[in-house]
Image (cartoon, rainbow, N blue to C red; front, side, top):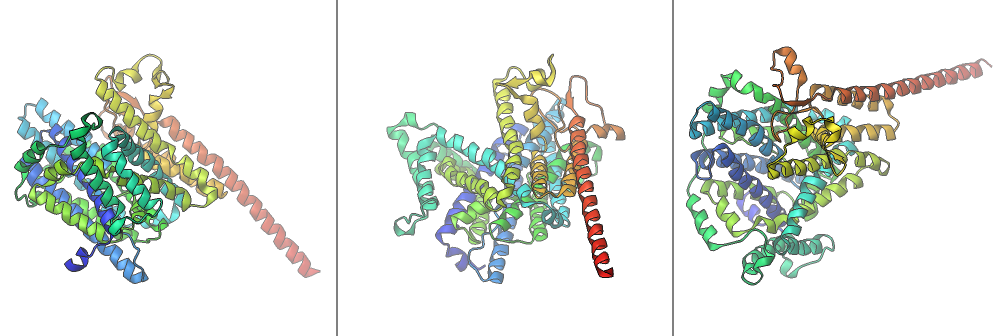
Length: 573
């Protein structure tokens, strides 16, 4: 793809570029904000010269690869409507690695007497290990991921994405849009006209471009006439001027030696494997589901190559100083619905890299409010949810629906946990540890314990429940028993449902079997739930289905034998 070709961009690619750019900017600005919790300020060398440029390079690598991949597929199949897989920073990993890897490392070092600068540097080192681990899991997982994808019912793969889309994409952005309607909700009208009604705007202007343009104009103009109607952001020239202090050349730097220094001290970082391994597996499965989503939308990409490129992008991020994995984004059918093809991805990677290398990220966000692009992200969530029902057999709709609620519960718990953190009073640990047990801890008759149980490993839970449902609908009882066995195993290992609360509102994975290999038992006062009852329940699920399958197969064999005997008898006669 040459430069002239890239500059000839159509309205669909422009809309796709704007949507992906807004999404990527949100993640990068989130990195800027959250890294401050770990002592890595917005003006620190670690952030400006390592983390942001490293993240940008990984985004550039992935976007260029997936753009090339889509262009190649389009040529092979002789069509011009192939949409590149969307790609960027993995939001769940970003949040988890900050709060459960980097922040504990930072606080631990400070408690041990390290200076804030030393503690921040150590937190960054541990974050690099976490990012590298995620990339390695993704890369080596690409060797067998296609087998898993082929053997898994489509309803199971897509229902998980739909659940995430309802809660973490559509609902999350809808709440922000209705809280700031003039900047975020009014632009939605242009998007709905463009993609619900296929309305053609004057001069062929894309609906997504107009949405962002109108939102930006409203954000700057409305405070002059209706200041009480603008909640956030409040745009100002002062903010634009302040953001210029970060401008400058910030080219990527190699951080491999820093990683090696810490790898040679396994006792320092091995405790974080309880976070790194589950998140790496979640990322692998999530990417796999997104590839299946793309195929359901009509674009069949090579699974192994797609996942390997994903892993390479994350590994590159770690070696260039970023602590945050990249991933194939949820939402391919949404971008396809926008009319995006291959160029939107390459253009996004180039612009993000240029912004990070020149320190322009804060300047861009001070001019264009992120809320103005939320309508595009909401559209993506709507399309993902619709696809789960539209591209699976009608009879599998109940299985798709069953796979939704663990992700919705996970979103609900995120809200509950945030409320506890914001309240600053009673904590989750106190509520769940009080007399009466977990059934006494509820909010409006919603069990907090139940929300946490479904939230832990919800990507696995969504997939497995929907898979069991789809196999039962097709009366494939052996397969249903197999998926039940997988659910029992993952629950037993602690990758689903089990959790611990060491203090306050911090909810972490709980691998009880670590104690058998010399791991430390939870300290006194730590709330733990090992989910053994759930593991046994899944095992009994499998046993029931296996017995039914065995009896069904026995009847089939008896029927076949009787049929053969009848044919032999007829031949003798």
